[in-house]
Image (cartoon, rainbow, N blue to C red):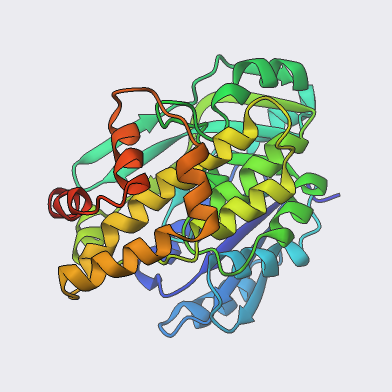
Length: 330
């Protein structure tokens, strides 16, 4: 049986794609399939994917119309046959012992999910990111005790790292959760899948080893600043309430806090547009009246005196100008 299915969604990343694919095909562990999902690329990615598939029989290629990251991951997992699923973004790369390290853990513990560290790569250098755990195997009860209080968002606005690419999942857990994620979610795609997967897992292993290299292009992000869509926090709010038990611990409160945190970012980014302030203010106040946002602002509780609590208070009372100022400095 194929041990790993590695799903790589691809859209117009010609300058990075070779490094990504080479890092996967060069693994010391060989029992895997690589699923390249060409999400309607208009550069040379499509041709390159087909060329790679001709050279290596472990490679499958899916060509589809552009539909976004969620739809690409769905297309990939729909044809996956591996025991474990892994996601790699097409502008990132992995350590040469990425799969062998994960396979060692599986052979000894067979966990439902493996979490592992990653290296964040920027123009300024590299920084290792770790999970707030001690290395080892966690049963359901152990993970509930150590992680659930901050699984989505605690009272200071911090949550468990949701990156889907810093985890390996048993396919029987990952596939149904990924297929349930709404294609319309464009920001927060990872949390919509990874958190429900975690709540379904009976065992999770944390491997304190940086196996993944995540490329963050801050210059590009700054130049391409644009408003986040309003249709995002509400879709994730609905999805999480449907896919996880809101009666366990304070998950209902955590979902509300997560929605408010996302809403703060959406409001701030509205001022990246060229519309006049009074027009944007009216649009924002109209959106804040929607039940999903109104209820989250009223229901959520953050630490008194924290910046996020101050932002929640402003939005709950239709005070918009601070977010205009925030948009100028962040």
